[in-house]
Amino acid sequence: MREIKISSEKEAVEFGKGLGKTLERGDVLALVGELGTGKTTLTKAIAAGLDISETVTSPTFTIVKEYNSGRLPLFHFDVYRLENGGELIEIGGEEYFDAGGICVIEWADKIAEILPDDTKLILLEYGENEGERIYRCTF
Image 1 (tube, rainbow, N blue to C red):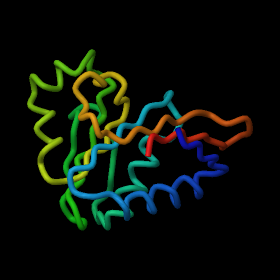
Image 2: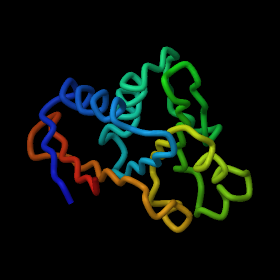
Image 3: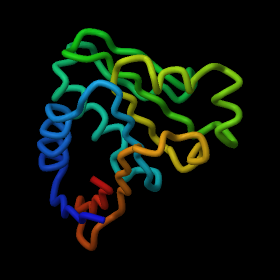
């Protein structure tokens, strides 16, 4: 796994924007990390890199939110409230994986068993210093 040290929220946003510019149709990005490690902040930055003009908010209660104003659609998931991937299948959520956009999934470890094999994983961890994060990426 590639390790990236992030020293500030500004660096996290820069990383996310850069990542958003490189993502391609059909990419699934799994974000895994403790509460407060910056999953939603990173998703907002990815959206900016996709030229999404809408305000991006965490879809905690709706599970998924669609954004269609950018160069590719963004399907933003927050699966914190789900027990497993079967619950996402029950509501048709896995259909987004093949919907021609980018899927970013917060708390993706909860549905790991249904994620596509080529899912890109980012583990977000707290760093040693205040505001510091470590991103461990499979890509």
